[in-house]
Amino acid sequence: MLIIPPGRRCLYKDFELDIPEALQFGTSQRYLILGVNGSGKTSFIRHILIPALLEDPERQYILYVEQQMRGQLLALKAHAVFHDYQDQVNDEAGAVEYLLFDLRRCLQRQRRPVMLIIDESTAAQPLRDHWAANADSSCLLEVSHRDPDGQEDWNLIEVTLQHPGRGGMVAK
Image 1 (cartoon, rainbow, N blue to C red):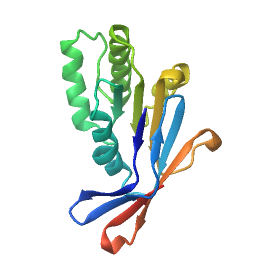
Image 2: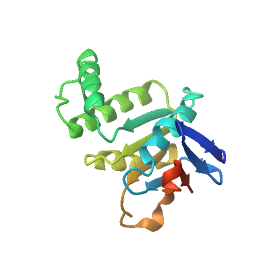
Image 3: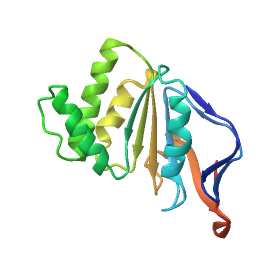
C-alpha cells in the first residue's frame, strides 16, 4: 500500500524526524505508533504519512480520526447534512459512525484499499471492527501511549525523542 523510505524529515523549524529504515504499510496489517506525549506521533501522521498517501489519492481511501477532533467534528456535521445523513453527528462516536457510513458509500461506487488512521480516539472500536471484517483490503494504524492487549498481532512503530534539546526524534 505504501512505503516511506528511510531518511531525516523536517517537521518544523529545527525539529526533524529520523526514519532509520523504511516503514512499510500494507493491507491486512495493523500498526501501532507508540510514544510518550510530545514525541511526534501525530506530527508523523500529519507531516509524513498523510502527505505520502495523498501523492496518489486515487490509490486508496483514507479515513483519519484526529486526536482532538473539534474542527473535524464541525466539518463532518456539515458534510453529513449535505449528504442526507439521518443521524446526528454530535460527538466523536457519531463522527466515527458517519465516517464509516460515508466510507461504505464510497466503496459501493468504487472499490479501493482503505487506510484507517486512528489518533488516540476513544470511539475507535467501530473502525477496528471494520478493519477486522475487511482486513484483506484495509490497513489499520493507531496511535497510543501504551501497548495494546494482543501486542503480538501489531506491527509496532516507536517514536521517541532523541536529543530533546536539539529538536530531533526517531521513528522505528
